[in-house]
Length: 233
Ligand code: IMP
Image (cartoon, rainbow, N blue to C red; front, side, top):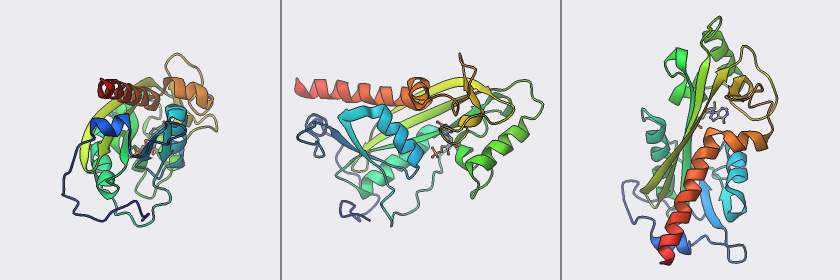
């Protein structure tokens, strides 16, 4: 655990992100004016996408270098609840940091929304992206109805308290076989509406212009801008 992490009573609920946090956050980099954010993930693909989406006004670090963190059980029944669970738990461990956590996944209409919140572990706890994709294609074998959507909810928390949540989604359809090398997860079998290529065939710029995560991040940036403006008044 880094020196920034504090061990403390996990049930202790403390101060909400104050206006001062947003106007001159403790992590503000003096020369760049960037806001420091801690992304509650070890998924490098997600971190890369968040970095691209947030741009130079934010300095992002994730949990990759944090070794001794407790396992956070995503026991909620919705993306939103799981994002909130992660954001609050991590912000209690790193009380000085502004934490964002996303929970995301794929919902397939003819599978009644599966894999949904189980997207990461659809083929089992020790599954992989490839096995998840294989299982989904198997479930959909011969199915004419292949519409689906990716959803993403981001929770923002500080010092054990939830500040806000934002969400985004992108509709599309599932292919009959994987195509493309970019991205991660179900990208090789998801064609977004209005395109003929999968997310894994599209460039990261194109995916980042239309994805569920891009829409949720846009909501987050809007939130920061509104709070910053009202903090200046
Ligand atoms: P989480 O880390 O619990 O939010 O799980 C997210 C899972 O949903 C990932 O492991 C992927 O399987 C899937 N997923 C979420 N977003 C994407 C995406 O942008 N492309 C492909 N798969 C995604």
